[in-house]
Image (cartoon, rainbow, N blue to C red):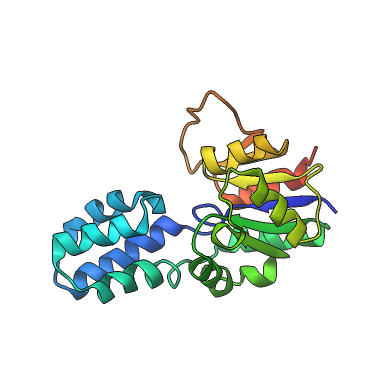
Length: 214
């Protein structure tokens, strides 16, 4: 069976939108300036800033207790992400056509698995790997090999779909897989490697692979 390896955050689910919503609720709850939503989201950098640094900066700026910050960072995004209808449909079509579907995500196991289960992705895919659990982060080849093993698939002829040029597209290149970059309207600027294809969102990326898998 052909294998489709798909990123989670800002690919299958809009992680950044969920984070902004969680930050807006946090600022409102503690009567903090609503305009600070841009400062907090810039600090977060789509989740790439280490959690400890974000927590320290939030406590230093606002003086709120550690529990409040922990709730925001541990539960805000995980409980707020949603799976779009088109993406849900595309995953269903791919599975019906015989593709093995594996989620490959960097992050903390509890938080990432909460997102997967809350959105129903646990029932729409054949399995997943989280970097914390397997001890390797994308773009390391090991995490992609672990994902293939988790769903009983082979990296031969596999496709990788993701939004990160470094983690997803470079990772695909490292294992000799073809890739679709989820651009969300961005332009490709990396010179060391390029995606096989580009799509605006996850649903379009999946549909592109299904239409022309070779």
